[in-house]
Image (tube, rainbow, N blue to C red; front, top):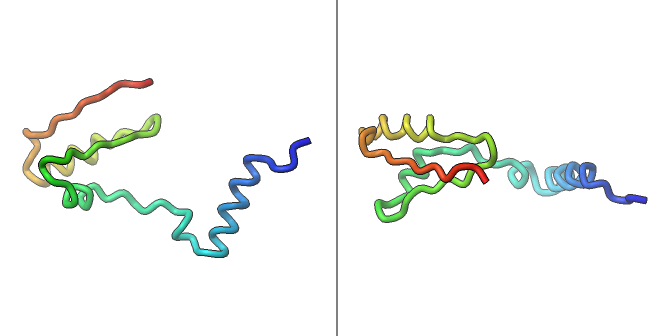
Length: 81
């Protein structure tokens, strides 16, 4: 007999953390590509580790256009799997 169900346990833990510590600890901060760009340096590339279905290319291209680097953008897709 299962005493602790995985689906119920995750929700219960989130609810406990939210009520005890606040929602800051269970919510992801909004992604700000401009801030990431400002924190990077030429010798350190920005690397995206993505979940299935995520595609940041539109945001990356818009940032390149905004910064005047549209012709300098290079992307490498490693494919799926």
